[in-house]
Image 1 (cartoon, helix red, strand yellow):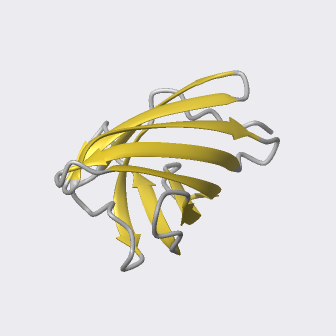
Image 2: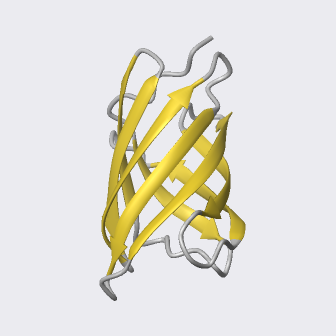
Length: 117
């Protein structure tokens, strides 16, 4: 079953030390078919975009780019694996790697914000 990410909003819950996303970072996703797009900002991120392909299990194969507060452009790749929480929200477990200068990698978790609360 294809997970629908359209109009879902996520906030970072945790991230590896070498990542720039923080609990202040908010992600807004849209989806058409298997194409998922997103924009994100907050914390150290001035503005970022992502594009992903969603597989039949809801897993995202993603490429991302952003501008940070220091004026640096950053790029990377990420695989996000969904977990459906008891209340129906989505939690994404992410394994990412920078493709720009540092080439560090890490893991992060982002969780859907309950906009109905």
